[in-house]
Length: 277
Figure (spheres, rainbow, N blue to C red):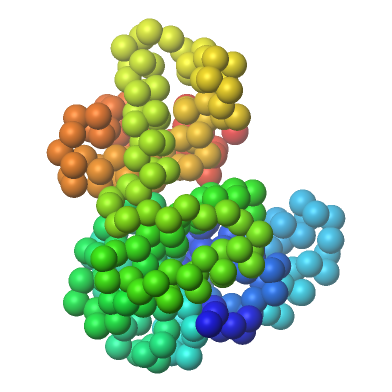
């Protein structure tokens, strides 16, 4: 059973920060492990939220329900720990090995990976029946869907407990067999990559590609707008991961994406990508 004071989050990047706030706002106390001692990203993010909502007290109310630490051993008594670090399989695997060693036997370990195999990430862990993927979409506060990714060894009890947990956050879930990219990233990667192919070939402009998707296919965002929102570096990592696993040309990243990432144009978070912000 996942209790209201026993959730751990590892990694306080954009996704980790959003998840921590979402959990607190739904009644959970969160132990949040940041990887750098001088990382003030969560406080800055809370300042932004408080300003956006015109509620100066919001930051302190949220912080009262978060324990921030760089000591991963503080997660030992959590019922559920969600790893939210970058899409680096070696780094994720290392985190899982540490959590498997230090957490109580009942703790469920989850990865928020958007594209990597859960079985690969957790290779060598002993609690295979209590391991799964819980893929929240970004931004967590607005996106209603969560992918629950199970391996052949994930127990029915673990999956059922996590279904109830997702429902407690007022979100919907889909259940997916472990396969890199799952549902959302495989669909999104192909769509975004094909939009970039069309742009690279000079067939249409950024705005016309996105306009066609929105007005012709009833999408709320065009694929290039979506890529900017997700982060072009993340899009590149996902495509590379899927190409490595499936060896299918449809996942081979378009050259324009690689050029933008190398030049530091990562989308909204850097101020420019396919559009300027």
